Figure 1 (cartoon, rainbow, N blue to C red):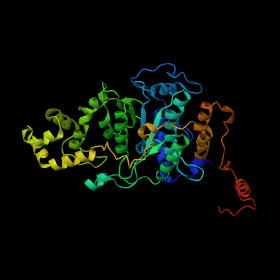
Figure 2: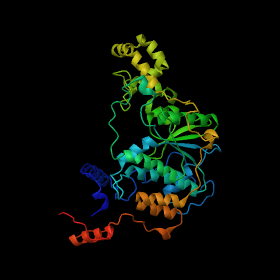
Figure 3: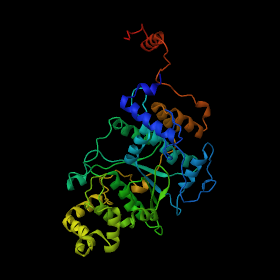
Figure 4: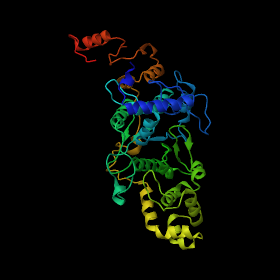
Length: 420
């Protein structure tokens, strides 16, 4: 029997089957120990518009890295002679990894699919640059459990979201353990969302003259992206495609500047967060209104000048809801430092620990990520240790006597009675 299949519920088997069928149609091979189907999660990384050099700027060793990983290492080279701060929206990424991966379980039944996706991104963000001679500054940012200040403004905020999948709940702590194993600092702040923590850290770094890359595709965070002529810069990186989201990308997608995106979202609303907006106003109409009046407040104050009758009436009738929505989508960029668990040096103190090879390998062993362990050992030049440390005691069962043999070996005494 396949050990992973034995640990799955019927629902998980069905979800796994559906995902594998979709992968097969797309020509993507999949196995229990394969990397997650998705570029940054473990598949092939796509290049961004930035050009890549064939060797690291730090002349570090690229031995053991494949072509795509070498490109990522060069891609994360610091800009403007500053070591960029890479802020990872860990909570959002966990959900993306969970839904992209077929269900996977450890020997004891613990679900691990999302953890594998995170470990793959850690390998690319941490191991690849470090082994290439760079020293990236990476921080994992998590949502704090429970409600936050937005729920005090609007008790229906995110009320439409389903409960967290039961097999995802135990993986949040495992992801934190993964970050610890790879030497990546983590941060969260009670009463605030990860977006607010990211916004605060990005603002602090920007004021210190340091570039910021936010690893997320969350549209709310696009409000932070700075124009291309800005020095330093705040950009985003799509965690799946590993392509850069610049200010031009935001304008092309939404039709407004990044600094006006909050006004647009306040008018159009956001169904994913249950932000009401103005009913009947979508993103395109909202963009045209912001372009015409310059801001949300100017639009609401001059709503009587809107030519279209229906649109005019909606803006007048739902002005208060639009203003509430604006407060809901606004990012807190100045969380008090006394409630943020920052290093003594402030945001400048965020840095990776030196690679602890044994700690990483031991964690991959505990998670039973065979293929990722093999690839990691190859990066470390430890090919001779490719054997996987089995903690399961599994063996192929073909007849009744095999079951008695396994029972005798595990129990250390006479076979236990096994009903058939």
